[in-house]
Image (cartoon, rainbow, N blue to C red; front, side, top):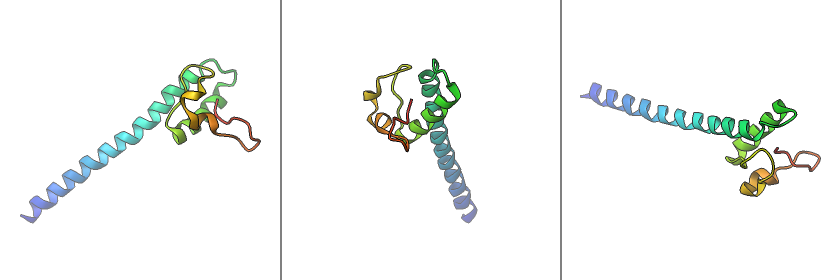
Length: 89
């Protein structure tokens, strides 16, 4: 009886942990794909992708298109760097 309870517990724990892992991975692929579109026409693509990724992870959104449309994501729009300039591309 104890072995059945332990086996059931381990199975449930495994299923819950794998679903949490998938949710975490989904967030990063979301940001990667949105930032790839956002930075597709950037002159300094590596820098654009880096800052877009930082902003996306914090805000969980990226404005559509390659430029502008920042009103779609106020968090993304309002992030500033140490000089008070917009941080997110």
